[in-house]
Amino acid sequence: MFNNEDRISRVFEGHHVFVTGATGFMGKVFLERLLRATEIAKVYILIRPKRGKASKERLVEILDNLLFNTLRQSRNYVEHIKKIKIVDGDCSMEELGMHAEIRKELSEKLTMIFHFAATTRFDEKLKSAINLNLRGTLEMIKLTRECKNINLFCHISTAYCHLHESNLLEISYPSNVNPHELMSIVDRLTESEAELIKNEYLNKFIPNTYVLTKSLAEAIVVEALETHKLPVMIVRPSIITPTLSDPQPGWVNDYNGLGGLLIGIGTGVLRSIHCNDKYHGDFIPVDVAIHGIMMCTWNYLALMNQEKYIFNFTTSNEIVMSWGQILSKGLVICIDKYPMNKAVWFPNLTLTKYRWLHKTRCLFYHWIPAVIIDSVLFCVRIKPFLWLVQKKISRGTKTIEIFANNQWTFDNSNVIQIRSKMNEFELMKYKVSSDGIDIEKYMEDCLLGGHRFLLKDGSKYEDFDSGRRTMRILFIVDRLLKLIVLGAILYGLLSIILSIFS
Image 1 (cartoon, one colour):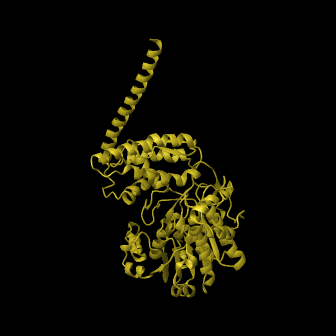
Image 2 (tube, one colour):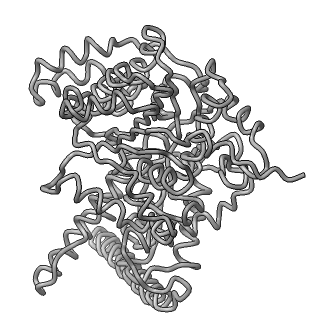
Image 3 (cartoon, one colour):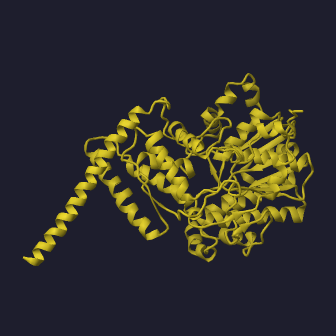
């Protein structure tokens, strides 16, 4: 008999939930899912003013996002939105930059906390990374300790924060660096002074400030469990990619990761990637990761399984695809199925594990053409754009380079065990595994999502005839230019040879 009981949404019923990072990629999806699929009493979201926009304006921007279309079309949309309460603050500040009145309200009301906020920039300055990722987590722990009715503090970490472990288990790992001492040292330094000591903490297995601060943030959360007996849970997703299906396929809000890669390939501006094509990548769609967090919350609170509190949200045990396979599929999709009318050159992509070769290719295939084309545009009084596009694409590809040139395996036994406890209805409503995912269709959805959500292309996605015409023209131009260059090289060589023998 089919069991249609939804025990996962029920575990959130009546709770007062605090969410940080609701303006970010995962945080937005979590907020939308909470409002649409659960009967929470209230959701507090921490927002800081940014670029001259007040927190209320930023919330309006969040709710206007196409991600919230399904929620907006629901009959109870107004009631759902009334459950949101903005908390003005900043994770990088002492006591989260909150006013005393709202902090008192939170300490009395909160029952669940989900900490998504973090900087994911790999080139972040040490002081900024520590303030956002490390101090922010410590301040959230302090708030959790003040809460009188807290049931759960969920910390969103990453599967790539313990790179010295070739096989990451669902356990805590000790750190060689004391997070409190590091914060104390950096507090006494200016940003430029902190940069001078950065390399003392970085090495082969801690290659950037993101990995350093995320690993130390985990240490702080584990310390809170062991010292203060706080109800904590740590989730470690791998590389987050656009939505699989919930609430709509292919939703993405930045150029980092797979969505940005496909847009870069399809427009012809991304022509070289630094990666080992034999290594396999580990991706997880953002909605699958969010469903996993909700599933683990149910396991922690309803099933009272609190001994296992660390979960690796990974997919490479179920789907094994090399970077070469992934990117070659992407190239075919970009050329044959969904060619882009906005392409600036015929798509082509080369992969290399050698950094020097990649840098050389970038110079000739990315940056020099960007300078030439932007200069021509400037001369004819059209706003240059390609240099800025290359900067966005470059930043997006850098986020995966470390993962694409190394190989890790991940144990996700705890996650698999919880999945086995879900009933048929829950497994249908909350996609929590990669079983049954059509990879090629998913990549197509990612590219189409890039059209819609990144390029803001309002054209009909069923009609790519203009894109195909553009591709035919660019193919001819590409081949002609290559023939001209090859002819010039042969002519030069022939001239040299004739001059030697004449």
